[in-house]
Length: 404
Ligand SMILES: Nc1ncnc2c1ncn2[C@@H]1O[C@H](COP(=O)(O)OP(=O)(O)OP(=O)(O)O)[C@@H](O)[C@H]1O
Ligand SMILES: [Mg+2]
Image 1 (cartoon, rainbow, N blue to C red):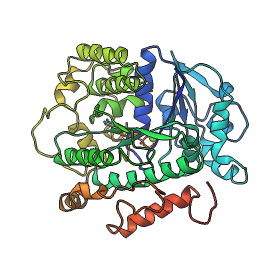
Image 2 (cartoon, helix red, strand yellow; image 1 turned 180 degrees about the vertical axis):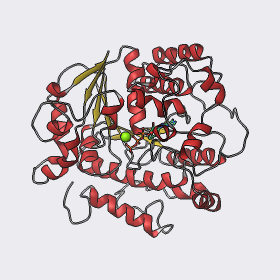
Image 3 (cartoon, rainbow, N blue to C red; image 1 turned 90 degrees about the horizontal axis):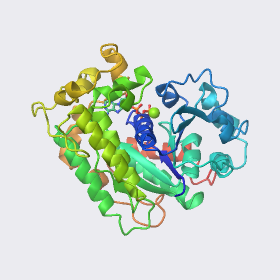
């Protein structure tokens, strides 16, 4: 089985990229898979999450990108079966440093080509932007996983990301495919969540015959529920399996790992782990399905991210969690993590109801050049169209032929 190189990307911030990378890797490693985690985000959240100090690393993704070190000599063994290519704080400077370098978009691909150690998976944690770092990740990967929060505004970001993938696929990396879409911080109590999921499914169902790199996408059945333990675990430099192995977050990521394994014909072992985790935690939810609301049906109050994050946890499951290393230690602001649980604004929710969220993705760009296809949001919001152009500029893909 060859090594699967997967970029976890979404230029929208705070959607669950890093949380997904860490915890899927942990679930896979528990089953004996060998996994590399690459931190390509100058925020170095992945590096910090797993307990490595980004200010103290000797070699980092910056060094690999700028030619100062090989991939093999930059990897740190951080857990049984998991190696980390850490980010250092100078990663932000890499874009500038590479500006005059020919082939700057494919440095990572070249580094991986020269790397021969046997691993099963590489997960690249992308930054929340479509700049050179993400471009390197997309050029090196064969697969893209897109974590998405089921919010109306997420759909516009999705359009822009697909456009970027299409361009990279056409110009740099013919092997690149969007193979997975994952709903994160899913709240089954809101009708908006269900509506967005249905619309996204309908959009991709309409693309199955199209010549696009996402025609075979799998929308993961596992949805990662909002779970406060997931938000707390980075404070303890612990994966969710180390921190709260019986909680919904652990169940969900174990289930997701099973689906990821099944994509290459090896699903059962990890699905078994999910069952074991379920037994350990006694959580009642069916694996891979968001559980039915354990609280009342009312939508949570919006505006206070920490409160919302807490509300998104099913109390039954939280109570069922194994004892945590420092149960009471995290503060609300630790937990909410700034942009963590963005409330759906009234306006956005209203838009969605009015337009039908489905209209946000109603005109799939089929075949041909995605860059020329109408944006799924065209005519809806000039600001967002400007955003798309900004994305192309950031990727160096505007019509002047610069960049890729
Ligand atoms: N399922 C979840 N339930 C509750 N909180 C979550 C969940 N997933 C992630 N979080 C929290 O939400 C915040 C954003 O998650 P994360 O850092 O994984 O997103 P990201 O997409 O990597 O962000 P960025 O774009 O800044 O890199 C973090 O504080 C994280 O702990
Ligand atoms: Mg991140």
